[in-house]
Length: 261
Ligand code: 8X3
Image (cartoon, rainbow, N blue to C red; front, side, top):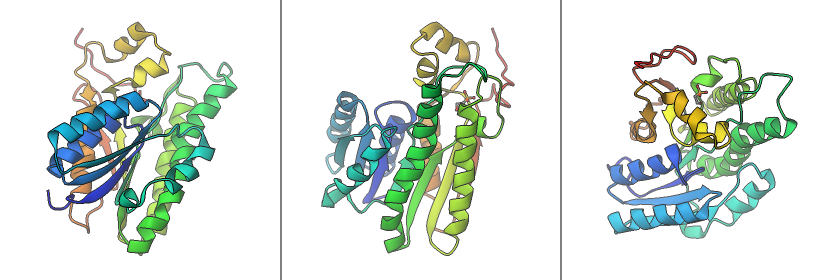
């Protein structure tokens, strides 16, 4: 608990899924002695999460701030507008991300290509660039980048999503090398299937198709990844969980899934 106590954490995509679970898990690990900057598009969800956190932990400070990361021009003003009390960020969780569709190459809408690259890659890079000066000034800070098995093991129907996650990996590696003479940690977490809104978004609200992704398996849930992120940021300063591939016991590659039914 003391390795995380009194830190300030910025999480993107904090309204649901892995982002929300990470906020809750870090708050629990810090026993509420934490400052959280929670951003997402859906402010009503952020507000609910803020209330839940404040009711559980009297010491916690939570700032909710609307941010659609895919609107790249919003990122700089978002960071500039973080109030003084929350500016000294220690942990950046680059969580916001999405897949849109399973169309094959030749059939993919340009706006979907843009939206995936903007959200998963350009926004992650842009926000990292904005926060890095804060980390460099104090020679510490953790950057958690959410990659994916998709970035290591590209699959048909993932012609855009997979390269966006490969880009996250490549960017993380380059950055870790650039920061070799600092105490800043670049931590990449690569989940396999996690049952969140991810597949609802990918299949554009077709809940049947979304459910089928996890059918007959015991998929990871958001809390499982939140635990890994929490573990990573609570290691000793000299320890970097550089990249972690996380599967459920039913999964062994992007396409190798065991279904019991
Ligand atoms: C999510 C995992 O395999 O659906 O990043 O791409 S997968």
